[in-house]
Length: 399
Length: 240
Image (cartoon, rainbow over all chains, first blue to last red; front, side, top):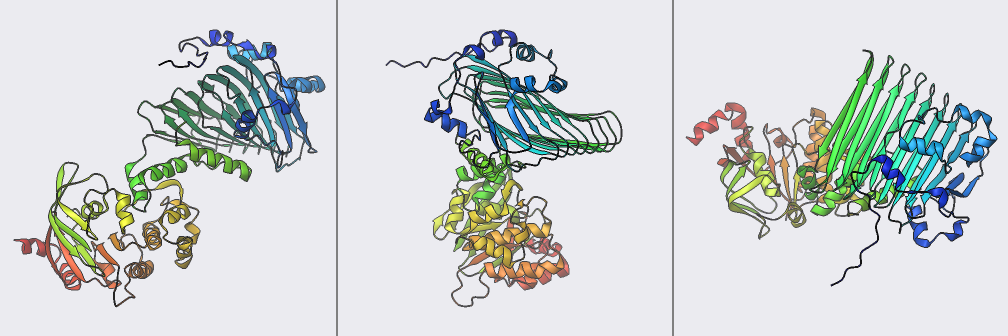
């Protein structure tokens, strides 16, 4: 009996990050998409699953980058600017004050690579006082084999503005290996609010290295939602939000499902540098055989701050690993910081409680998994919320 | 309707039930008294089929079906329902969803919640932050939606304040069809430590359990009065 071996470009596990980076070719050498009409049906389907709405109904703007090229960039809302970062850098001289200010250029091989060879990225800015109900959608899409995509994004919510960004990141369904580097710097000015929702749906041999810095000023609000329900080779991310002004608030919600073969090293850090600031990190992770490192770090540097970290994991396959690392760091007495972390399997008494109401064991388990992943994601448009709920409902069926 | 024959049950390797015989006919409500730790809850959990309660000997026959080793949901489908003393919290599962799983008729659960002034809990996670009394109310609304033929009630009055005891009593009466006097179809077994629920719900027979055995049976009101007067000490002597 002969088997058809699928061509994969699996990298050795013990490869250094530098060697890993070198094993990919630059996105700038890969062909780019000039029109969305070139997208195949299966691609469209996958992109819809990361929240991309092609009809742009209930979206105020769209930015789609494939490999290094911008396939679409338009925004039809007064008070909101959307353009490729390369253009914005040319247009606004002042942007240099925001460029590499929250993420260090020299941080690691990936930031150095992005600083040296930028492919592109998005620039989104809500002008002072602009309040938008519907989100701007962005999509960072890798479409060619064995490519490293190097992206640098800037989002600025000016004073008193409100902005919602939905970012879907994905790779071509047939693609076997790729690397995505995404440097993001978010500025939330006085009294502004940014809701940032990121949905990942990569491929089995894709490496992902986001590097994110967030600055929140007085009375500013930053809400981050991260959803990753599908398999990916390796993600390593640790966004850091610094609350620099009085009463600023940051909240990170993550919903992560790790199938077999996935290594998901995902954390969130909030540095509470100003009085009366508040921070919350909530992560829900499920391993179906993959490895999850769920990190969380709260740093209390000012009086009257309040911060909470919640890190819960379910292992639903024998060989799954969840490593929760919650950290609280207080530098003075007048802080209120707490954490709870729990890792394990689904409690049998919960399953049987539902079975006593007539549910089969399978339905009872699915109900509990759904409930577990049901983190209240604030500010999502109802349709995207419904999509995420549907994806969560599917996730227990195995990937 | 429910026949328990010489039932021996182990919990975590410890013998808890030691040869229980109990027969409850259609339309009857029985009451089970006993001190804490006498094995009452173990009996109810075993009847519903919860794991951790290992039947070593004997059998449970419900509606002529031997259910001794049936999974929990199969028993529920046959018409067994239970109100747990301390049900687990289901994070992320809303009460309205739970009621949908229970309800025999679509929309029944929600209507019941409104009827019993519990509709403000529909959007809340099941049992999360519920008070003792709220847990009991939630359990009974679920059961009323489920409408089982045989109801197992574990300490339905514990943690309920005086004002709500009457309402809990009304709900149990409805569950056990106490408003039907001829051809009553519903049966039940109520565990009570304090016996106070008898002031609201009439039972047909009473049993006293001690150290995993049935000690005596009789008129539930008389047994309750005896326990109130002399305590369970008297039952111990009775055993001798």
